[in-house]
Length: 372
Image (cartoon, rainbow, N blue to C red; front, side, top):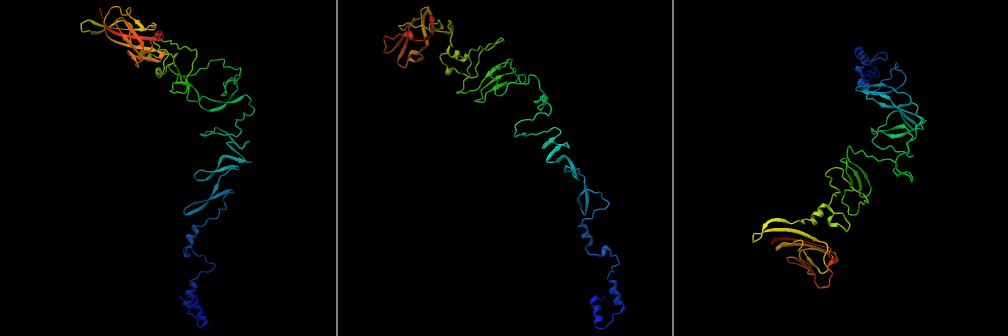
């Protein structure tokens, strides 16, 4: 087929194309009044796929968004209500239940009167903080006030006549003492009254006992004046401490059983030891405490041990506060010594022949012996 330029040259040179050449050229073109098939237009289908369809004239009025679902792109109507914020439900934009108008937000209401008004419950794990620091009263309900319910929630309740009869955190007012009992429910565990310093406390235990500051703290004392501890059950153990205090006792300290056992681990009654002396006679043992010592320092015990024949062994303990001494055995730092005879003990302060031995607080003597 001759091109258009080749046919032009025929006429320019004075030549005339043959009929077949002219008709071939004519058939290669489309007339303006003819419809060209889409398949005969290069790239037309691919181009149309990337173009947006014109809105359907049959669509109703409103707002639409472009929905692309390959290979087609269409219009989809947005279902909105006036003044409601928009949300996405997974396939379309819809109106939420959050209403906004005149800088006020309402949830569940179309007529909010505050900056934020919620018709329904609010659940939060954080704090709700107000710069004003108060909860406003319920409109028109002067007898309502906020209460903490047993289920852990807060709510409004009707004010009772004695609603002001409570114990404030700052304490009761002067002249307004507590007139009733303070009852703590300790059925489900111990309940405590605690101090903020050093962890001091009073615990009301579920077994009925009362515990006060049961902690080791050398700088904090629990002081109780004029109080009796009485037991109501058989076998009650009396006053008991959680720790041993015997190493720190003072003049007027109450003593614990452990301390008493330690200080008085002897019997004042004569008893058989179960042993025998070399002469076959049974051995006896007895302890005597002398709280009054003669001025001379001679302590006779013939009345306490009337039938002694042979002293086999002796043990002694002397409490002598005048020289700041309390010692076991028969001598103290080479300054005091004690000798034992069959019916007499002699106490001597070396270097002081005129000493008044009645200053000795006590002298305890334990003897093992045979009888006549």
